[in-house]
Length: 286
Length: 286
Image 1 (cartoon, rainbow over the protein chains, first blue to last red):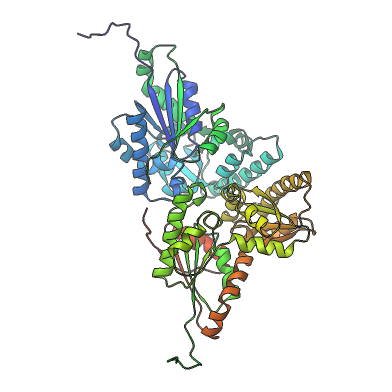
Image 2 (image 1 turned 30 degrees about the vertical axis):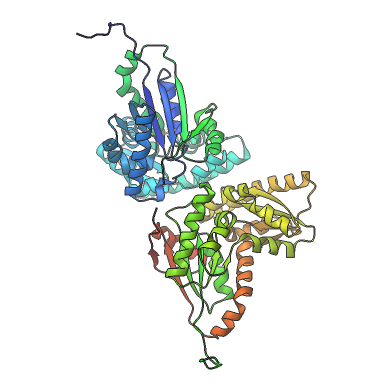
């Protein structure tokens, strides 16, 4: 017999969100929009970024340490890996390192692309490291899609520089960079006989470029954002737990970084949509 | 009494060149142009870049280990630190770690700016990390110059993407980015009552942008490149030693990287002006 009354309200769950940098804040934003009643702990492993240039073994160790911090020290009951490189190369290692459910960013993105595509052909843009891992190609193939990937190395620094406003002179430059990248990608797609109807954003920085990207593709191509997709998938997983927690539990966001706290606070509000508040520095070792 | 005849020809000296990444290859190029009779060992600590986001202590340790590799394992008699961050934050630590002369990139740049400037006012463009260290401001002040620094975070990724050809559509984008950065810098200079006549390139990637930068500044402003300046300073230091080595000693370049050997080989030729050949992977530890 349960010792709790049926009307017991459990405390709100803490969702841990992890990225090597700041981009994962766009995923945090999507999670908060869907689950305002949850609590959130976000860790950016900024001292050890970029993960993209490191070996699989090193990335697995860094990601496992970061995941353990969120679960053991911040009480996360559910983990979202808001980092494409860690999702591509270290999801198994993270799942082995902690006892809570772990959701990467790549499979939900591929599933959302699958739901949106009629032709079965999908364009994917991402960083160099993500493209070289071919994780999106594999995840798309697993849901019956053909994917054509392209690395767009200038888009992350353009977002971090804040050159994302369509009306500004700086935004016009970003629009032109996007046009050059997408022209190349759609030319390759045509040459390979593909008829893509989805553009999948395979980098957590790219949601800030959504207006520019939507303006750059023909109306026949839908822009799908893996930040939105992973937030939808997390909400489906946590539905029961959130119902138990009841309405009105106080939401809270705690942000942590392993370095560059100032840059985090400066960029964070742009990614999150409102001020991140005080970011706490944590040391996870070398 | 010397046991060597007066006509003894000593072997060519090995000059060690160190950077956290690939940009230092522009310094290597300038060194080779001035001292084709020397041998060169270049190390890019690519596994641990970017140095810019790390603490002074960590950078000092990494740079000292890299310097020791070049001296102890590659026999370098003279070291050039072709990395602005390491020059700004770790020159003392490197000098303590090895027994050979060590030349950073910042003081020679400031001295070259001083030789070129009549007004005493100098504009400096560099990465975010270098600007935040204010190393150029300090080095310029030491030679009687007033410096105004500006971080230009998009220029390194534009160079690494190869968007540097003035005649190309991609080069036109880079030209526009440069115009936006320099407009902001010259407006600030005017507001502060400065009359700059030198633009000092405080990043080893920027020499690849020289044609675009020269086209962007008025003829009254001279573009000074710290890669050229450090090569001139190294040549002055090594003059006697090179004379001893005699003419016709075989030149040789050995390239090493701690990670991303493929990217090194791909970008290297662009920075160096000809193929870098086989790059050897070395492990300096975590």
